[in-house]
Image (cartoon, rainbow, N blue to C red; front, side, top):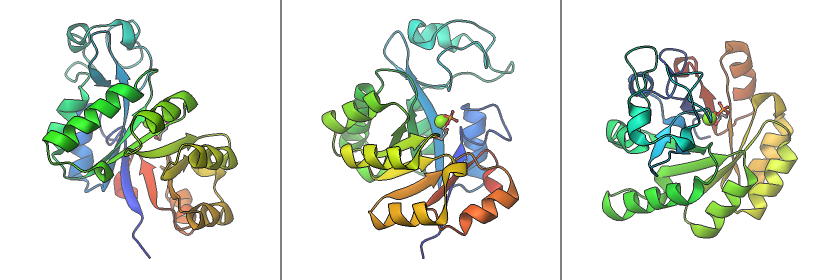
Length: 228
Ligand code: G3P
Ligand code: MG
């Protein structure tokens, strides 16, 4: 049986400010197999790594990410000495030491992320299998599946494994990413029998992790990857 992949949530959110270079460095130090991060497109077109649609919760500024330029976003600080990274900066840091699960969080991110992946495959020695792109948003999944069928897709859900499975079939996704409370041994097994990987989130309690590991999921996303 294959090992269950250890995936750091927003880097290693339990140890450092989420989606910052420090958080990604910490996840690498903890020996993760993969890192999950959230992506938006900013006003000047760059892909930036931040969870929310606004900068208000995590930075010292205010405003919507898609209305701010990269220069404006870079002028903001997160907990005084961290900042919002671009997706390129994160890839430079990781340098193929683990895989990356890019979550399409913002609207209209599928095409720029597809372009990003194509560039990394054509110019930087990556393969399509090195990227796992997930989203809760039907439109983003649909656009990605149409513009770039080479990209490995994962369907996120916090509502229904059945719906995630249906979308996965529709968009030829490789994986479903259900919230862990939706999982049963049976629905994990059935999804895997249908050829889908099952990556679950966000698991931070040892008792929950032990139970879900018994279902033989393919990967677990945690703020504390050392618990996995
Ligand atoms: O990709 C798993 C998880 O990150 C989805 O929820 O809100 O943490 O992005 P959220
Ligand atoms: Mg996420």
